[in-house]
Length: 270
Ligand SMILES: [Mg+2]
Image (cartoon, rainbow, N blue to C red; front, side):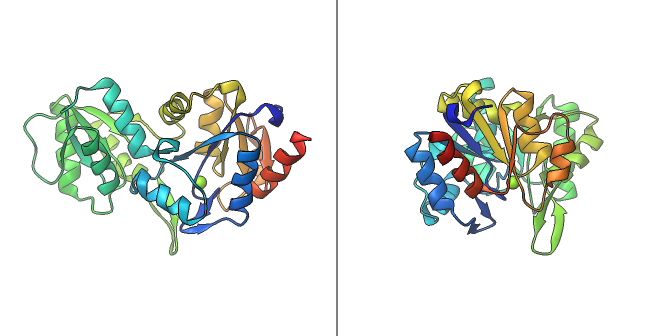
């Protein structure tokens, strides 16, 4: 892979551009280098609990100008996929938080939630829900088992890091639902190809000149490799250099952080 030819960079958020609400050092310079090199970019995050607008505001607080069209969350990608496959007004039962529910409402779907079984439901969407209950899992199970509802998952991440340690993520709720329904969901977020495909189409990107930059081998990098994109692992607490080098195939590049990527991009220009 020759970085000189890269025209599009797909970036994971947490662990690459920021840690929770703190930007990584050198974030301003990194985006200056992208602008200089006329490289377009998109943010791909499996976190669907915050809206694209929230993320846009967060990036602009870090001095990174962006627009909603460059931000792909598991919620926006789920909405884009459902718009392609279901009619406006389709009825969707959601286990999830405000990010996914509002995004689906804005996409003109009728959103159902709560602990009673609605009459007809086209799709059950399972995402991260910090207020999940047995009753919600019961409703979703009945709709999938007997209501012929399609079964869609925002993202498969079983855990995520919190200040107290590793805690359950969307994938843990999903594990309960797959156990109860005996069905496998259609997954929207990384490493499933849907998120990459929606982003590539929206950005009008070509796979031969696109690279995915992430800090998780099992989602960011594996997903990119599956659909033939170049990949770059940046090191964080999640995936180590040894783990990355031993994986088959390894990522095309392993760097400490986006500062090092900015250095490499500057050198490749000369
Ligand atoms: Mg990450």
